[in-house]
Image (cartoon, rainbow, N blue to C red; front, top):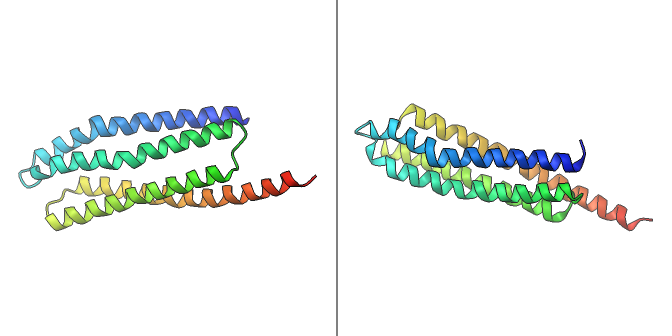
Length: 159
């Protein structure tokens, strides 16, 4: 697969992720909140904080998608192994870890309040797991891209 084709496919994946992220923030989270939180007298007070929390955690997600789009554009223009892309991957790693910290905070809040539902816990733990995995892999990719950039720079200097 050529770099232009790879760039197009990766951008398509980013658009799909963005679509599902918007769908989660706009439709699924409010519906899940209504069905789980508003139907329970003990959990009714958590509906508005839940929706606010989902929108707050969407901010790092969409910033990471924008950075991913920029990296895909660089891949399409044969500029994949640059320090700039390594820095963007590092930022994505940090954003993902911020997501993880936010979801750990949400889990702690739910346990302190003492009223939790199994489906909510599974949802939070699943997102926490994915945020940690994404953070680890983007951190590793950042390191590898930085090393490849150094090798490329050294090779460009040799005749």
